[in-house]
Length: 357
Image 1 (cartoon, rainbow, N blue to C red):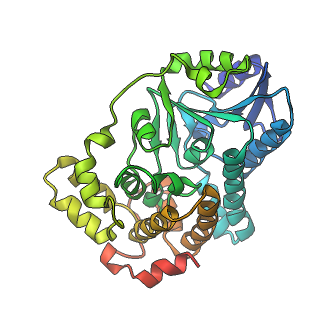
Image 2 (cartoon, rainbow, N blue to C red; image 1 turned 180 degrees about the vertical axis):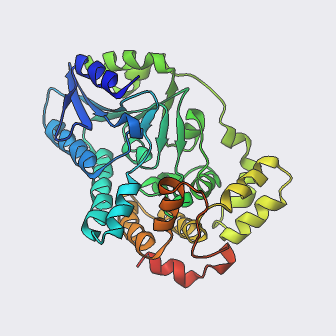
């Protein structure tokens, strides 16, 4: 479906532009809907978009006729592929540091607003949900995945880290599964996403209109999806033995070098595949992510993690591999980044600590 066709379909459904045409809003009964409307970019978030989402939430906060709010993505590819990191990189290279770091601060304020919202927020995690897509959806009161859901925090491949508060949840995932997802950027389905508490339920995508109808009629969180959920096995649970062995469980996670050694020494093919993923990542970003996970595990709220995210985002953009990682993956697309350190053994504790200053 073309962008024009998507726009016409959304207009027919009652959606209208907010402060930006890339975020639409609609009302149906007691339900208010937010639609991310940048389908060609899989709804990647810009500063204007995160501001518009917050404006919608603020407008409906004290409106007694609104009992629930949905967050959805236009098009068939997914809810949201992340933040507009290409734009962030361009702003940084142009010396516009206020625009660079202002994006992260405003995005994190939006994440916090969703986490604190006094009404039921329902995120529709259909299709691709990555990076900023996790941030805009995983602190909703009801996170609805589908058979098409693909969830990941792939930031270490661009010299960054899993931000948007995601480490609060990943640091509390079963065993070493959170560290595994955070360090390798592995993509998982809806059932795995539920296993690590980034989602709540899985439904068939054809059932979403029913959920919307129920919410418009004032349905509660549980009633909105009653009888619609599907069961499935979490592959992460089936792979817990080698994941926990490599990434740590019931103890402090190992160093990046130790993780890599355990993966390479494993008899499990999936573990060795994870090792191949890990060595493609920025060594500095992997080390910083592992330290951020440790710190997040001791924090009491997502707000503390988001404050940490602000410091680490600035550290990795200014002193890390972010500029080079985005170039290699998204600008030149040569997939051949020249990381600042060649291996995990080159990283010192002092280098990592400076990133959090």
